Length: 368
View (cartoon, rainbow, N blue to C red):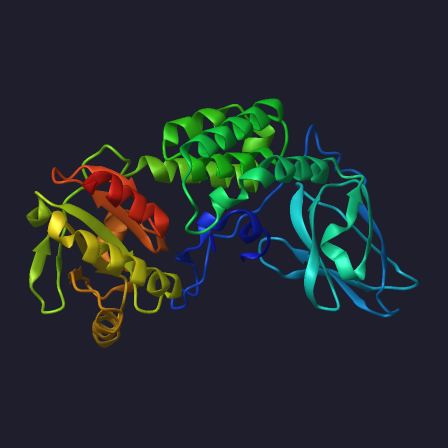
């Protein structure tokens, strides 16, 4: 992810509907805690934020928000261009400073130190932040990745040389910043460019134990573990589930074809937004031994069938109408949608979570 606020700005590939408490809505990503700092965090004194921002009227509300949930953690007002916050963190974390309860806002990677912020209302995003080693590390990473931003955008243009250059830069950053709490974010960026989970794991292992044990470190470790399940190069386990008419369909009956097993639901907005891309690729390659098998996490048959018709999904569909407890989703440990697996004629996984231009590029490489 999918609780989206800060990491959404920096990790575009996490745009998923998430299996959380409110599973009926198409929320986005898992909540991430993003601690960051080089060296050992001094927790005794807590943090102080001293702000000097020109352009806001006295009495303007200033909110300190949780960077992963967007929930307010503290609130004050501006007086003669000044505001301040005090508190204490268990671990460095992303925060948002919001003025007058509306964007634009300041993104801060906060640790227990004295932080100074200076800026002006009309260019608040350009505010200068000093005093936090964590934020300095974060700024270094952003500066490092600035030339490669297009690689992380949705439907990014693929350039093998540029990707290799970005991966090398990130790898060098992590090797130099193994004690930085920003390093897990760099590892996440690396994983977005490199589908080989082994390479990502090697980079993650370089991090200090303290960094690995933060919420973001735990998140990266979990993502690595998840990636090892149903890994590229392994045979995707067989399953049987009923189609819209109640007829049982076996995945193994598709052997001999390239198949995109697509996990989705009628209520999942990101899924519905991706459907036109899947339709376009299906139509382009359906005469070349390619097809799609949709696995729906719906609970209502009418909504499922109506969405199939509305989106023009002219391929096979199965569901047990059990929502997030769909037996196939449980079998493959699917906890967010959209997700997919691309398997070859032999049933071996050759791609995972291919969306947008990534799906088109992969199929083009197969059928060129």
